[in-house]
Image (cartoon, rainbow, N blue to C red):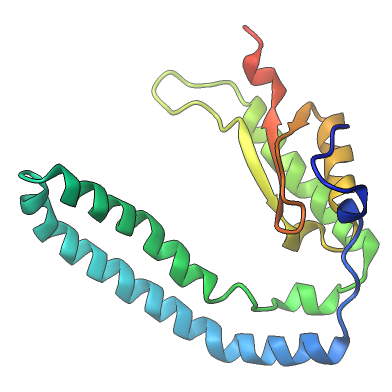
Length: 176
């Protein structure tokens, strides 16, 4: 296994205090609906602006590039407002290694099923790269994700294990 960071970064995250998770969960219940509404408002605004920007973009390439860059980054910025939120399963299973192992097995298995599915002529080819977010492997560490993924035919990509583990389906490079 080729790791791109210090091996200590690939271990499980420390267990967060229960009271802190409970406070974050309570805040999440209040904040997440606001973020959802904000995301819908931003998406609607981008759609309306996009209708008018299309006419201007026909004349200016620079404006089109700036508009497309803004359209690509804005939904992600709004989604990041909820990055501190805690879900009910996270609250219940903090520190539960068996739960996180089962979660990693399921997530990697789903990605493997997608990547190994035969491509249909009228549809897009299956995804050959994936990112497993920290939320899925917090209790077991990135090393477990890499171990499960390597056993199923994935290869590691350059990864910031404090955020995600990036994988590439190695069978995609082989000629069928």
